[in-house]
Image 1 (cartoon, helix red, strand yellow):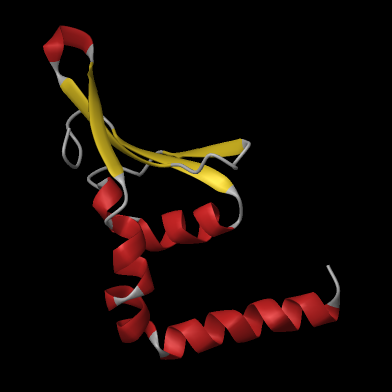
Image 2 (cartoon, helix red, strand yellow):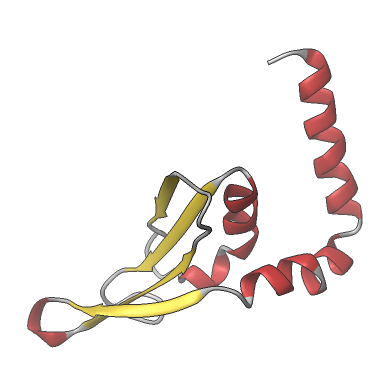
Length: 100
């Protein structure tokens, strides 16, 4: 990575951070509303819930597994960044955590 690319990444982050209120109620909210919420049945019939954000042109995917007591609802900004980097994103709430 060159200093130019590091500088542009840093500048982009700083710009978004300064305008975070507008970002979170605009582009981020619009993006997050496109999520697909789903579930599968785990051991003993317990539903395991997850959220997916996909695009037909993506050829890579990332599975995000939050830590204890965290839900996928905490990660829209991470999902946004990964999605715009060309990844489909799936975030799971494991058994007994978040919405599972």
